[in-house]
Length: 321
Image (cartoon, rainbow, N blue to C red; front, side):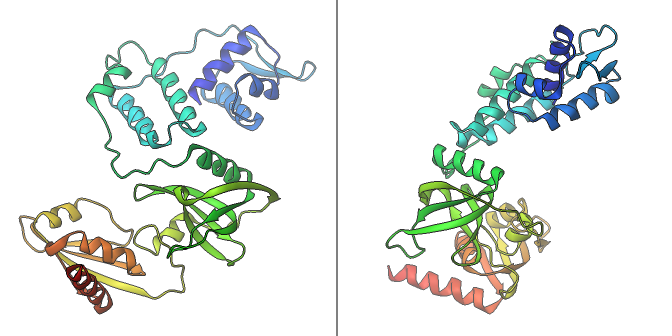
């Protein structure tokens, strides 16, 4: 927004009596409504002499306006911008990545000279490990982004859970998000009349349909994902389990340092942090079974019995292999 405000002020100084629609066309990628909010910010928050001329149907400054002060960003805030850019690195090549990249660099360039930490220096001083991050198809991500924002139905080919022939799916796309190092589409499947989660890398022959839909105002992505332990969602009708797991050694410290589920609580069992009890309420046990197995002998399921049996059965199957 600050960058847009800079551009609006400079443009109106050189070309007075401009409408919001004209300014939106000059500053690409935003709507007239966004420009109107920016103009309100210029007039009210910056207290600049901006007026609208009814006869000429445009905005102008009634008095000379001095150069707008540069943004006062600290070194820490500049690093925060850099981290934001690195977070969307797996989407390199998409319009979203370009928008974030260009916007953040414009902000960095507008910083005053007292910020001595250069943007380029951060590449050598900071990185984000992306092992396991799935680089989804640029075309698929871009198409889904357009469909979600435009509220348009989509169809695509998708493999069934247990493998086999691809099936054509027709869905209402609600949300695209990064979950557990992968990109997924949350959508309402029209044929199955239920919500589904689709991995972007498994989609093929994606097509935006002409049919538009109205989003259900009751849908909330946090509520949708909150029932399961990971990517899967089980809705409100599935049985919920009170999970209790004891972790020891490195696993105790590792688990205690992170937020794994919205309902979790952690009880230290030893003062040095080498033993803890993890508690959460989850729906479905598939993903948390894999999570427990990933900690090996340092995880012991205390409850429920179904989870303990599932871990036991999987461990026996591993030994048989």
